[in-house]
Amino acid sequence: MANPIQVNSSWVQSIDFSGGLLTVVTKKRKRIVFLGVPPSLWEELQAAPSKGEFINKHIKGRFKEL
Image (cartoon, rainbow, N blue to C red):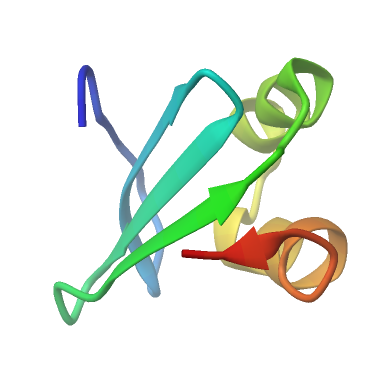
């Protein structure tokens, strides 16, 4: 991860985005990488009050996990 952003979340520890790859690190240290995420969705994720809820609703199941 280039510049992970630490977030205040009960599930997510940090998020990072580079070249369409969204990397999520959970509090349990699980690293999840989503392929093909558009920059606009990255912007929305950063602004979302609940990172976990946003990921589950808008990213998980819609983008391939590596």
